[in-house]
Length: 270
Ligand code: HPA
Image 1 (cartoon, rainbow, N blue to C red):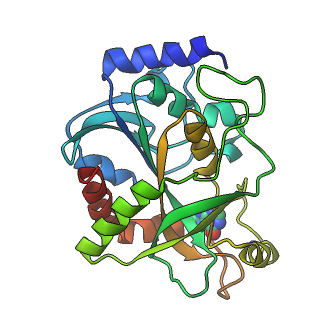
Image 2: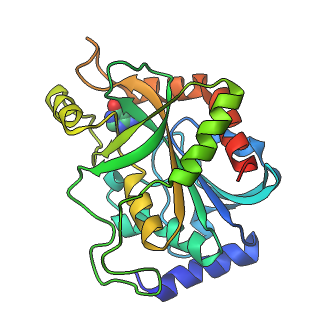
């Protein structure tokens, strides 16, 4: 994808919705958060030139702009995942389009499996760092210098400043907030028990199939990133039961009030 393709998409979003300084992405089961926006307007992904459309149930495919906590925000209701086979450029396209439209702060949310055995499904986790276990990277290919350097620094993938703001808001709201390392697997199958034991040894607290490619592209173009996981299930092999997507969506739905309150308070405090 060249600069022109990003510009074309950005022009469409600008004309139809306008600009914003904060971007929010909603993970599986968390899409209802879009209801929290006021003065909200939306644009179907399908109407944005070159934009990929998700095939996963529970991902609406709408680019929103509205007001939240005193700020104008973009909100992505539904994301495409690497496992859908569209390529990581497509998966992360919205990040660069947001950058062209003025976004400096990106809040990425997801549903994730819980690797840390001291925690439980329904817990919320702030991402402190990630492990890229996919063997892939969205920046492979010619570097677009207009966005960022060939060898971007990842020593602070998730902003300590934003994490502190979120932590403070969680305390104020009385929400227990975990903090840990998120490991990205390609999916679409869930991990094996052996893989989960392996990443626990390597330092992972959570696993999932998203968020990391977007984080990499956002850091490349100089955005500050906040990552928030809803731990929807104990990862494979921890409990004597199989994993399924329905459970993921149900648990995410169960904690969406808490999740929404924390997200709103965090944006308000930015
Ligand atoms: N593994 C990977 N991705 C996930 C999981 C999981 O256990 N739960 C929700 N997303």
